[in-house]
Structure formats: structure tokens, C-alpha cells
Length: 445
Image 1: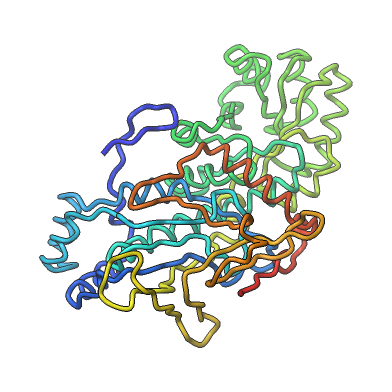
Image 2: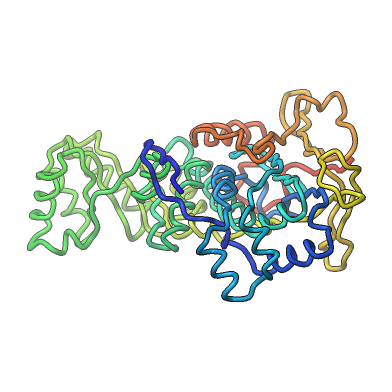
């Protein structure tokens, strides 16, 4: 199967059908045998709580979910594997051979913020269709939303200074692409990962590592080689040996038109001030300073008063800055009264009633964000009945897939812009990095 890349080039896309747990298929087999697989069902994705201390969440990965659902097919190789491993019986294999998701998906648009109980995604169709998507949907949304939330906090800390995503070497190669995409939604400007640039048309950056300096007999030789190859606007890494000497050599080699220097170790606050003074004294007043070295939102915030022009972030970003998942769940909230697959079949609200804080609320839900008199968000309102007239134009769920067809593809920049706007609409306390409760209460009506 082929899909278009961001550049319009054909890219082979394998089936996503096996990105799932075995019990999704064994539930399907049992439901097919009982006849319940035909029942119209409504599933919702939500989280019961935000990661400890976080004030808002960020929806990310929606575009990837749409791609994954579109490519959820059981081809001959997949069916052969399921048969060989005796995962399901022949009748179930025959059903899977013709599988296409033909239901509806509504959700918060990518880049939107969310809170505990927000129905981030609603999947409707037969039980057989909808249950198969559970693991795939959760794996994408939990990972990407965690990275985007960390990226958003880092973007707040950085202010107007650009952020560079540099986490590819700190995670799985496929997760690196997803993380860089999510970071872009959350506010990062560029990535070092070429696969992400190719697939999603995100700007890529990068020049050299310490190995390049160590390869040459002298630091001057390394800088000369880089400037000769990449031009004076390149970024030179200046902390391999002596920082002061390296900055002096960098300006001598590249001239005052040197694009930037990068500092990757030590006391970044102190070094940034000293390097800025030195660059200015050497006439390189327009040369920028980029800092890296295990940064997170708190380290970035601590450098707010430093003469830093850009930040490169890796490990903390791709691991969600201590929260690598959002604890989202995918729960059945309503089903048809009888064995029927018609969307207009009467629905019965269903909910998990259990100990340990894992109860859920039944019924197909809508969500809206209520604003105060100044136009600032004051509550996330979630309900199952009629939408109050005053909230009718503030509803958050939008159609993503209708009758199996994707209807909400959009450029990644649209999600990035949406997040900036959504975050700006929250109370100012949302941008505090200190630990706190969700900035909006969730009201169930």
C-alpha cells in the first residue's frame, strides 16, 4: 500500500493491523460467535487524571491515528501469521480478511488542550470494528500527547527563543519520528531527525559533533573544514577543549559573520554570558548562541536571563519530561440495546464500576469549553444530554472519520497554530512550571 509523503512522494505503508494486543482479536472471536460483534458501540478515549503536577494536557498524534486507521488491513501475510499462531479461528480470519473500518470517529482537533475526563476521541461503529482499534489508538495518543505536553511546557519556558528537537538517539527509531512530530505540534521549531523532515516536512538542522573536532589535528583545522564546507553561517561547537580559545578561533576562521556557536556542557548560564561578551568584543555581535546538554523545561526557564538564542533538547523531550505516557484509556460507554449495527439504534449507557479509582461514566458525550466574561476559559464541560445553547458554539469534538472515510486531514502547521491559540485561551496560571492542579475543572452535566 502506498501513501503520499509530505513532499508528495510515494511511500510504502505497511499494514497497522498487528499493532495491537492479542486479546482484541480473541474478544472479537467470542463476540462474533455470540452475535454481539454486530452491536453498534461507542468507545471514548479519556484520562482520569493529568500527570502529577501538570496543569493541562495537549492532544497530539491525531493525524497519525487517521493514517493508522486508514491502513488497518489484514493482508495475506498478517492472516497467515494469525492462522499459524492459532490466535483466532477460521471464521474470524475470514471476517478479518474483509475488514475495513466503516464507522465514525470524532475527536478534539490535534493541538487542542484537554483535562481529566475530556472525551478526547470518540469511536463509533460495530463492536467488532471499534474494539480492534483500541491498542493502536492508545499507543499513538498516549505517546504523542505526552511528548507534546512536555514540548508545550518547554516552549512556554523558552518564550520567543526557538527550540530544536534532538532526541532521535535517545529513543526507538520509529518513536523518534513520532516524538519529533509531536514536539513540533507542541511548539518546537526544528528537528535534527531527517526521517521526520522527509515524512512531515518539518525543518531540519544540524552541523557537527565533538567527533568532528576530535578527528582533526587541531580545533582550527576542524573549524576551517566545516566553514569551507558549510559556509560562515554554520554553527560551530566550541566546548571540546578550552571554551574561550575555541570562540576566539571560531571567529578568526569564520569571521564576524559566523552564524552561531553551540555550548554543550558545563555551567550554561555562566558560559553563555562569557561567550556573549567575548563574541561582542571580537566583533561577532550577530553570532547566535545555541545551548544543549540534557535540558528540560526547568533548565530552560533558568536560562531566561542568559544571552541564549536557541535551545536543543533531546532526552527530556522524547520521554515526556518524566511523564512518558498520559494514562489515556479507551472505554466502551454505550452500546445498542439489541444486536444491531445501525447507528440510530437505541443506545444503552454502560460504565465500568470498580474500586481503585477506575470507574468510568457511561453515555455518548459532548464537550465544550466555557469562557468567562473576559473570554478566558473557566471550565471544561462534559455532558451526555442536550448541549446547552450557550455552549453550542464552544463544542470541542470535530468529525475526523465519517462512514470510514477520513474527513479531517490538515497540515501539521494547523495543529501547531491551534495549540498556541488554545494555550493562550487558558488562565495565566496554566503556564506556571510549578506543580499544580489542572487549570480548568471538568464539570459533568
